[in-house]
Length: 573
Image (tube, rainbow, N blue to C red; front, side, top):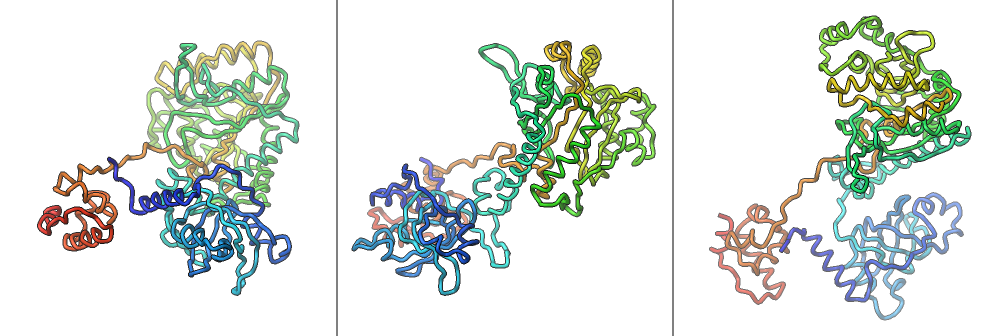
């Protein structure tokens, strides 16, 4: 028998049963039609009181002040909180006062959902309130919410602030910390603004497979799975690039997709194994055109969220209005290290890494070594939006060779506040060159590079049918939202970030108590007293426990033998 419920949880379950015994369904099936919301009432009642002579609201009870035959409470809905006034004789006009005296005062708790019908008025102290004429129980909460006390000046006491708890129980976090909802409201604005911008250009939103037979389109380690019916391995996509390019081959001028990507890699403040990316491909364009488009798009997004293109990110004011600074990959390394790596071979690059104390391994080729130098010595310096352009060909097997610079490709990455948020190419559309590049990736994979790209023969076949000149772009939506909402960790902008398995606490049993000599019939009494585990009991005062047992025996009218004082003392040995 499990006895892991707290005293509050036990009381709430008892209240649940009493509601049912009174003929009240604590989880009714009928729709409850809401006509008003807290924020609208608070913002607009005084200017237009006639609009609020009859309102229907619903939400959680968050505070209560019971004062005899009348009470005040606060209801929280999706927009905020509003005070309600409940008078016994108004909700119980007849002889039966059970709904107020028993249901509202004794059986409802903080966190319960209720529906309220009434009218809005100003109290004698000038506070906007809803005078309740009808009260309906909509959902009984069986777990107590954390009690977060808020002063009028905004000071918070006993806040629900532990990140482990907040991310794992986001439903509680957003209930008791509703200000965090703004992060996700702004996340929606970011995506909507970007989508609207693309649609106005005439580009089409599409969907491509998440389960893919070949993990292509990026250099990353995939999640692998198996399809039983087809008896074949499949991978959760690390990118949707190769499928979107197939659609350009098919004749679409511009396609884009907001989608979940999955990379079986590390987790930190800017990485989650499941993340959201937007990728777009536009025919007859190049990476130079794409830079201008990105600047216009991101300025549009910033204005949609903040009204202006300037965004506060930590101690920096980031200006998303273009034009952005441009630096080539080689020039950026030269600028921040004083080292010119442009003409170096793999051996020379390894020596540079050793001199700069950058860890590398034998599987890394020339492109990876340059990337490691850049990541360690350049990235964190790029605060204002900066394009890093013209990457070594070894780093980018899907980009077109540079039109004037041998050994480079037409690629840029956009860095803001020290992190990459966008990646774009003049897309490689030469099928012979593309096959050779992917074959080089197979060589790297043979050296142990588990992020090397796989060979995708169907994609190569598509290119052989002809793909027009195309520019492609990928933007990490989670990182962009971090910037637009001034958050320093990716977990804050994901409703449900990936986490380690929750450590399960072994539920205590009656046997745990009987093993130390406690009679089984007294275990529920100890639970009522707040001792749900033997460990909790042993922190108590033996004399007080003995006296309280006697009091509980009398209060509960128990017809069981009272343990002797010596027996109770033995429980604590």
